[in-house]
Image 1 (cartoon, rainbow, N blue to C red):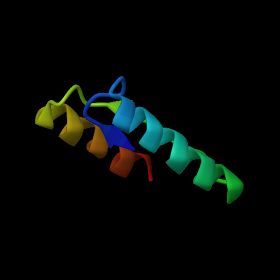
Image 2 (image 1 turned 30 degrees about the horizontal axis):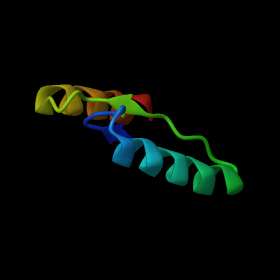
Image 3 (image 1 turned 60 degrees about the vertical axis):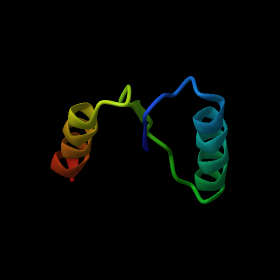
Image 4 (image 1 turned 90 degrees about the vertical axis):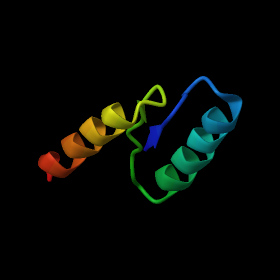
Length: 52
């Protein structure tokens, strides 16, 4: 999951909820903060696709 500002209470709560749901199904969540930078988001997404 890539969020624009991890310290934002909305995104912090979203991360907690998604992580909880995934954990119940045996998955782990990886989180990245893009700092609202589109180039950073693209770079982080690229890391995900290359890892497959």
